[in-house]
Every structure is written in structure tokens, then in C-alpha cells.
Amino acid sequence: EVQLLDSGGGLVQPGGSLRLSCGASGFTFSSYDMSWLRQPPGKGLEWVSTISSGGIYTNYADSVKGRFTVSRDNSKNTVYLQMNSLRAEDTAVYYCAKRYCSGGTCFHFENWGQGTLVTVSS
Amino acid sequence: DIVMTQSPDSLAVSLGERATINCKSSQSVLHSSNNKNYLAWYQQKPGQPPKLLIHWASTRESGVPDRFSGSGSGTDFNLIISSLQAEDVAVYYCHQYYSPPHSFGQGTKLEIK
Image (tube, rainbow over all chains, first blue to last red; front, side, top):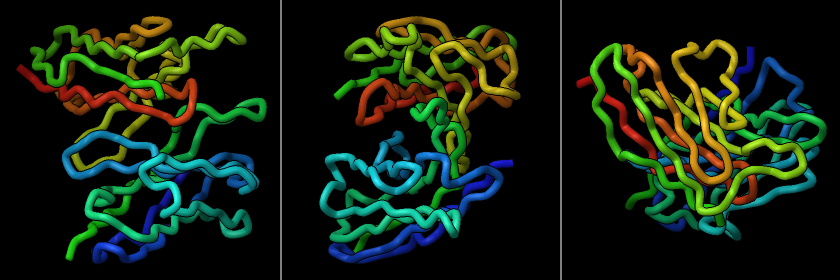
């Protein structure tokens, strides 16, 4: 059974930093692209970042580009999201998600972590 | 960027009745190379992460009840619940994975009438 365990959220002041982690089990982690998505309280879903299976390729939403960095450690089955220069509008539940991949291409989000809440406030 | 627009924003349906949620994309998500629509539907219950229901616009995920179905192609899609059950109360989102950045509809809140 695929399991994704998000952690690392909390309260941080504007301008501060936080690192989220997502531990994975139940599948061959190193074979799958992984993504981070977020959901502000009471609002909809927003894709944040994706990292390729080997960690070589990354991409980001314009709203976080230059402030957030995604990385992974395939030896630890863990993906990370380093968040710097945090703003009030970054307040959200952050989810890691495993993408469905076939033939070297990845598509929709087939499994999601339970989420971790990040609150940016003074 | 592809913009996804769902309608309605909220919907109240009686138990056992049919519920239909529409999703429109600002450009086609039909990939010519494989004739697949890069469109998924998710269900999110309060306090839970989203759950994948349907991908490729009409392929039900394993374990999803067959009262859930997806239809449409190109830019216009529907999620249909044929006979609403109490446990179907949730917010439903469509998602395009045709081109980055991934984008979602704003969500449709489904309630019991």
C-alpha cells in the first residue's frame, strides 16, 4: 500500500523559512516523479512544484519560483520542500503527491499525503 | 496557462438522484499522439486529502464505485454520480495534466438536498 507522510509544517513569521518532508513507502520511490501541492484554508488546490524521479529536473509555480526549492533523497525515500522568504499568502495545507507514471512520462496525482499546515503570520 | 472552470460552484441533490458537475478548459487537453484527454477528477472530504476518482477523463480508479463516471473530450467534461449516496458529500475538483503548470478547477461543493 502506498503511504506518503507529510511533516514539517508549523507557524513561521513573514520572511522566515521552513522545510517540509514527505516520507514514502509501498512503492519504488526512485522510479516516480513527486510533487508538492497546496490548499489555502477554505480554498482550492494549487500545484507548487515537481521533481523528477532521479532529482535532475524540477519545476515550480510562478508564485513560488526563486523562494522554494524541491529536492529528494532516494536512499531515504523522502522528498523535501525548502521554503524561504515566506509570505502570508503561502499559508496553506501542503500535500506531497505521487504521480502516475508510464513509459517514462508522468501524469495525474494518484496518491496524496495527509497534508501539513504551514501558517505564515507575525 | 490552461484555466479550468467548473460549474456549478455548489450543488444540492437528493439521495438516489443524479448529480452532474461540469468542467471546461481554456484550451483542448486532448493529446493527438494517443487520443487521450489529460483530465482527472478528485473527491475531497472535509479534513482529508484529495482522492483520485477518474483519470484520462473517463477511466475510473480502482476501487471507485461505478456510480461515478466521467465523460467529455477536448475542452468540455462532466463528472456524473448516477445515484447520490450520503458518503458522496464532498468537494470535487477537475485537473488538467496536459501542459504545465498543472491546473485545477475551483471546486464544486456537493451536498444533500
